[in-house]
Image (tube, rainbow, N blue to C red; front, top):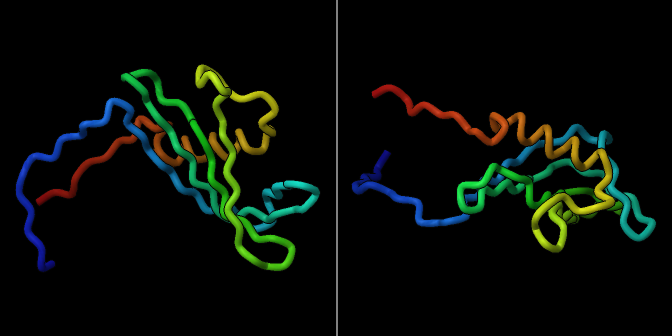
Length: 117
C-alpha cells in the first residue's frame, strides 16, 4: 500500500450515525408506491444515537427494480414528525428489514477488533 497516515482522529458529531447496508434476496420484498410494485434488492438503514441516547433507526433507503427493469431509490422515514418515536403506518416488512440490519451490525453496538500487527 502506497499511503501513510498520522494523527489521532476524533469524532466531533454530537449525533453519531451508522449506516448499515444489506443485500436482499430478490423477490423477498416488494414495495408498492402509487400502485406500482418495486422489487427491492438492497436496503441501507440509518441508525443514530443523538446526545448519547440509545441507538434508533431513522430511515431506510431501498434500491429496487421498477416493472420496466429500471433501478429506483425509495426512502422511508422511520421516525414521527417530532422525532421521538416510530412513524405510524410503517409496514411490518420494513421493520423486519431494520431488524436484519441491526442484527448484522451487532444490534448497532458494533464490535470491532483491529487486525493484529
